[in-house]
Image (tube, rainbow, N blue to C red; front, top):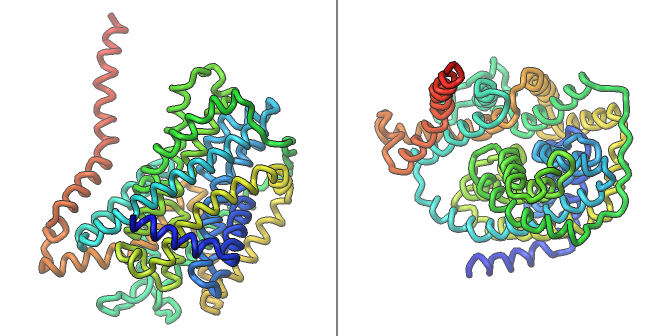
Amino acid sequence: MDALNNLVAGFGTALTPEHLLFAAIGVLLGTAIGVLPGIGPAMAVALLLPVTYGLEPTAAFIMFAGIYYGGMFGGSTTSILLNTPGESAAVVAAIEGNPMARRGRGSQALAAAAIGHFVGGIIGTSLLVLLAPVVASLAVDIGAPDYFAIMVLAFVAVTSVLGSSRVRGFASLLIGLTIGLVGLDEMTGQQRLTFGSLHLSDGIDVVVVAVGLFAVGESLWVAAHLRQKQSTPIPVGRPWLSREDLRRTWKPWLRGPLIGFPFGAIPAGGAEIPTFLSYATERRLSRHKDEFGKGAIEGVAGPEATASASAAGTLVSMLTLGLPTTAVAAVMLAAFQQYGIQPGPLLFERESALVWGLIASLFVGTVLLLVINLPMAPVWAKLLRIPRPYLYAGILFFASVGAYAVGGEVVDLVLLFIIGLIGFAMRRYGLPVLPAVLGVILGPSAEQQMRRALQLSDGSLTGLVNSPMAVVVYLVIAALLAWPLLRKLRSPRQEAPEQERIDA
């Protein structure tokens, strides 16, 4: 009952005219940016971080949440119309949505995606309301060894599931951890990687790192691969679903959140994995298997509901443990730190009005998302006609202004573009960006928890594994690292009997 009472109070905060306006702005910006190819909600939040310095924290986070949900939906629009995902979680929407659009059923695909996001968002946020306070109450008893083990699990899990190989994932994490070391050691006061510069003594601001890796790195990457040929958007028309479409989509809409929410809440790389699992599930359960690959509406409805519920799931670990499991959550964590707020077990007690106002705004944003985007699908299609040179030139301009606003120092602009070049190189060699962002944000915290645990045990390494929870987490980490090796060892043994049967 306490959770429901707090949620009612949160609605009192979220439904004020000012906060409703910020929620609508966030949903519109997030959808518009999600629609544009290559620009996801993480870049949107990173770009808007400096803009919100003058805003009250609750208003800023309500707008960020709207951008998150809007960006998740916007990516599916460009996937369906142009076969070009605007956000990584929308990749699966292109598999069936684009064939539907080529068959003249783009409006039905967009409607299935919009309603799927609505259903997934409502169910996912409801689970957030029920589970987040429980997780927070349990997390109060977590000690330094447990926190360090959980952070190591986040590092290993994210680097293992993103990118084309584990080596690239861990290389990206190493880059982030190295950037996080810059500045003064909190315990000894010694300078680390400052190269004698006083400007680097305070470290590199997380906002500069996030904007550099996402906005500048992506802009340079697109500029290096710019093509002059422009695609013509497919006519959308008025979205609607027939009775047959509804009969085929209501079950995927309900199944999607059950897959998406748990994966969003654990450090497993966000919505990419659960959306693929949802697609595989719908393909297996559907009575219209012959339509898959040619435009099966179940292949749009299920993954889109999954993606939206996953977005709600990421907020569970971010708010209760301070562990971001997606790039957007990592940038939102930086936003919390910008306001001097540390997410964790005590957040629900110290910043109750802020947290429950944010959660209530997720319900409001989900409704706004459906109301705004069903009639505005043709408008989003027209946004895709903006020439990319103008688009990315504007992004670089606003990124530069935002980075300069952080400290008012020219050094921040130099750092922005150096980190942007690092982001470009990471894309060039297939290194995922999220592990680097996690390394920058969680690296200093992980180091602090590790050193605290070692101090409590007089420097003995057993201090890192002196609790049952830490032991369980390290066993999970060992399983994650050993599973690919076991699978490789198992494969030759399976192939040998098959080869013997062939020879016979």
